[in-house]
Length: 303
Image 1 (cartoon, rainbow, N blue to C red):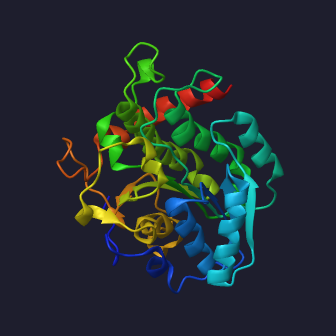
Image 2: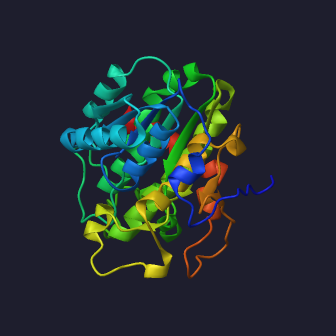
Image 3: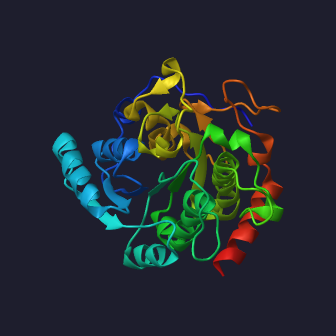
């Protein structure tokens, strides 16, 4: 398969990527859309005329964001709905309240390098929030995505996936000493494998999924990071960080394309060792057998 390249790059903004696109009549969901790149992802989609639902834990912040997006884009079809991805009841309620087709699902919400903590089910919190909650959400919205006829799922991953594959024999650190960065890396690898697995299973339903690295953006995602910081020359603004997400959600260049990983608005190269600048995608994150195993393990967890 030829590596996909686009006219956009590291400095492109979400608004530049969607310029000229008309998604009037299309419906989109963006999780975690009340902060960081989620806001700019939702804003860019609203700019195209799409109806956008902000799926957020903090609905008050979501309402403020929705009002701001309407003011800046003129799009009044911006909605707010409660969603806590670490709470299966919250996910089920969100799914039950949804009706009609869904054209774009942006799995954007996430946490990074959390201190050790677990959900009531015993799931490690980063895996539960960054991956498993989004898996359950997409699974529950499958019929809505299929109804759209040509739907896209955008899975926000990270270069952090280069820190760890999914350790299938100990996903939830029952035996390994907990390491916040290994847990984060594992969850982000899982997010890429989801794009691989979903595309294989749902392509005939008109659904494709791709994953991405948004870049280094100073947001509240980094509140647990401490002294670890990306050099200023490699940092992006939230508008630049959202660019690859909206590219995958809207670009005609990605029509019918799924199961791939992008960075800086272009498909990433496969690397055989972790690079010093953390670019590229690890082979284990695109491995179909790993994707199949993760899918099966995820269904067992949610059963």
